[in-house]
Image 1 (tube, rainbow, N blue to C red):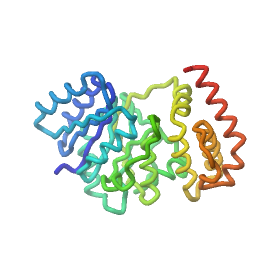
Image 2 (image 1 turned 90 degrees about the vertical axis):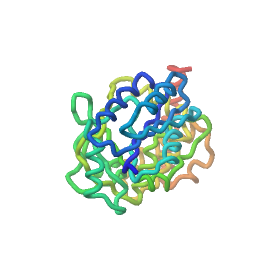
Image 3 (image 1 turned 135 degrees about the horizontal axis):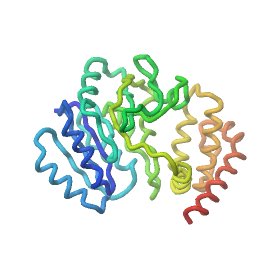
Image 4 (image 1 turned 60 degrees about the horizontal axis):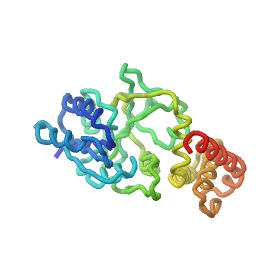
Length: 299
């Protein structure tokens, strides 16, 4: 049995998946399973992968088709099928350096145990530039601390390798109707409420990092998936010993998302009621701004 599953959610990415496949074929260690979750593609992804499955002899490829539901539902489907000790998500438009699998399995074999939730490593651009700062020079860190700037570094993209049994413990992520923008990092943070992750200051994934358009894209996500954003902000507010500025900023976004979702009992359902009361006026203004920007750009 391989030690790790590389799982890839894919939606109409038949043009990009071959690059990822080529990088997996080039791995110095073939001690992995590649699990592709097809999130309702309408292109030729199914046929493409079927040919790979028929031809590939060095490692196992598994393919699962599901109705389109967004990234978090693809994570849920992948986690339900995990059978290896570790799992890592590599997006369909990214790829792995040739030694990534060997690096993960060797590092975990030397340092891993049930004391840790997995490994946190780096992402890089195609030119080799690391995205964000290096991780702190310590054996392990906590992703909640990383989120709240406890380590005082510029927090770029990270690659999380997680123990499959812990994924299964927190999955599935909830779904809210047709909302498709629910960040699966929600599960990583749930795991981090109990476990630290080992630090590996090496890139395990090469990403196509694109600048521009982020603001409007986030406006669209906030507007179209307000219950999902309210849920993850509610999780943020439940964390202990976070900075006041983090709690207040989170509360503003929580209020905004709840209002956009037309949720009731916004204060009652919050883990930090006083913080939410204080943040309510700014949260209301933010919800009106998002509503205005969305209708101006997309309606």
